[in-house]
Amino acid sequence: MLLDYEMLRLVCWGVLGLFVIGFVLSSGIEIGVSILLPFMNANEPQRAWLVARLAPTSAGNQVWLLAILGVLFAGWPTVYAATFASFHSLLLLTVLSLFVRPLAWYFRASVTREDWLKKWDKALFISGMLPAALLGVMAGNLLKGVPFHLASDMHIAFLGSFSGLFSPFASLVGVTSVALLMMYGALYLQTHTQDAVYQRSKSLAMSSGLVFLVLYALAGGWITHLEGYHVTTDIMPNGVSNPLTKFVKRGDGLWLDNYEHEPTLWALPALAFIGGIAALVLSRLERAYWALLASAVTVVMVILTMAVSMFPFLAPSNISLNSSLTIWDASASQATLSALLCVTGILLPLMAIATRGLYKLLP
Image (tube, one colour):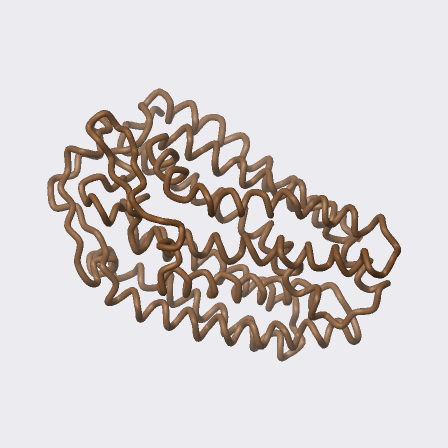
């Protein structure tokens, strides 16, 4: 059955979300453990075991990131261009740190001198902290609005500055992201370690989890007063892509519009908070595996909360409101989206199976 243009846009948007979820669930473990490694108080054999366990997953996890970029480039090329034009410095630092980390895992496993082991531990910490924080900062900027302008010839101009991307709200989202992935990584360690490392992982999961819950609640309260975006003209889900044919308004609390129209969506942020609490309670009760699953649910719900809050926006502009990009007016052609859906329909399950199989094969 062939899908019409509207449904294709919606389904491909959902596929993009699934790739984002896959990336965070797979790389989030590795990122979280990398951040926690200096605080584990583990001896060298224990650290070497952790490295041996996670090093094989590092390069494979980056495939999820490449898939996200590929789907965005093929499905919403204007959004891809606007994102890179606005976040080029943040993206460069993020991508470099993500692709340096597999090398850091490899070289740490290959050296024996104590001074070099400490240097590679620091490299792993930095390569975990940077993407965790910067991805959160970029998410915060998308919620706040990105300072770009779209000209009539579709030329994109970034009108902000690097320092301007680190607004108080964006920085809060960045720190919240770090705390979430630290909790996720700590619960993974609690599931797969014993004795002193187990207890340390349990302690770190509790502390980082509590920080996440506080920051998540604070960010949620802030969003209720944060300026959101709303399309004031009729949306043409089946229309030709042209971002400049609509009018957009900005106002406090507009990111809550979708929740007012569909109250059941409140389940998403609620489940994120409940999942975080459940993860900490289960960790405390020595149910590490179920705590890890609860933290994974929290990760997924946080991503879905942001997605449905912004819908249908992908990249709102806070400088030129009508330049804001949505899933309806910034997508590729119907033929391109059809081809994209066919490719990702094969690729997504294969990547999920391969990632799951790789983690099951680890020692």
